[in-house]
Each structure stands twice: as C-alpha cells, then as structure tokens.
Image (cartoon, rainbow, N blue to C red; front, side, top):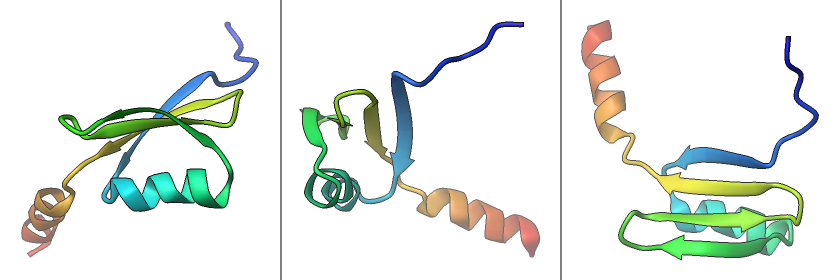
Length: 70
C-alpha cells in the first residue's frame, strides 16, 4: 500500500470566492498566487500547501436536494 507524507495541492469548492480568499489572505496571512476571473478561481498558499478555491453556485444543488426530500 502507498502512503502519503503530506499535501502539496488541494482544491475546494466555495460559494463566495472573495470571502474565502479573505479568510486565507487577510486573516491567516497566506499569499494569493493566482486569480482567474473567467473561471472564477484563485490560488492561495502558506508556502507549503497550495490551495485552489473554485467559486461554485450551490443554489441548484440545494434546490435539487430539497425537491428530492419532498
């Protein structure tokens, strides 16, 4: 079995790209290392881990889940 010894890159889907970026950059002191408004996504890093934040519209997913429960 293979083992991991750490993470290098991780991607997260977020509903508010600016608020999520602010958490990492303004609050935690990470550096923004890549922004693409057309996607929209940005990358932030603490020098060891690179985190990509993708903005996703969760509203349709929530609507679909609510419809299934009814």
